[in-house]
Length: 133
Length: 133
DNA sequence: TCCACGGTTAGAATTAGTCTAAATACAGAC
DNA sequence: GTCTGTATTTAGACTAATTCTAACCGTGGA
Image (tube, rainbow over the protein chains, first blue to last red):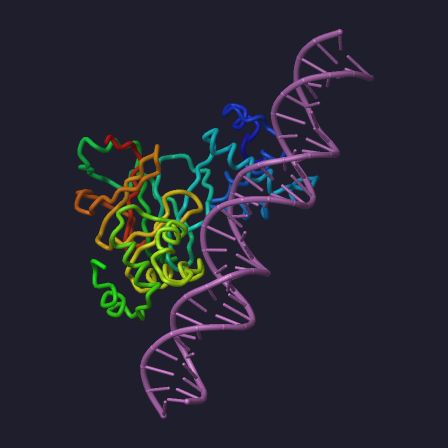
């Protein structure tokens, strides 16, 4: 295990268990932005015991609440998970649906003039386009 | 019917039917961003015949494909529909979940430096915060 | 009029996600 | 080491959103 997952979970107030460790480890090492089911498929054979989908959902929700990972939605009706907790935005390749992280600094300036009525907590930019490999 | 729905549908290549007209009309006159079920509930008694959910979904998808309305996702797992086709972004009230349209001009500048690899088609800004009424 | 075809219908099927109840693991008290 | 209580995990039932299916209906053109 490349990352010290037990410590990461503990410092975020999530009691480490084998299931949670293997899920968190997968999220940290992958750079795609998997759905719950993709996490389940990727992780289920890495444990000596059977893994329940409920555990995957419980763990993902616990990790989101603890601030270890983020939820994101780029397509309708599917939640994806992202272990990149730095301030960043997303670029969606409209052909493949692949999602790329765009560091916040890349978006040099965004100037909002919403008036007093709106108090902004955060904003997120989703960019759609094509990626040339 | 306030808008000339038949003409709107026809010019977008969607054959007008009573079901489609009443759904499109509702979307044009409402300023909230309804889910498919909210559309169904709002519209089902406006027709002399029973309305099927399948028709609502078919119609919404047809209108999206034809470019009459847009799909949007602010919360995980629910699709909302927006008949405002002008260039705009969204402000989500984190307390109520209500969505407000933010005209594109309000976002004065956004400067992307993504390099040659990424070809941007469009971008969308979702702002999260509180609204004082 | 008749036919073909697109649109609509009700309900079945699918999918993503949550809930439940029973089984298990584990930490602390004795 | 054993007991006990609490948290976690499991399988499967359940729910909500959406799509699929097969039968039915309505309208325009031959």
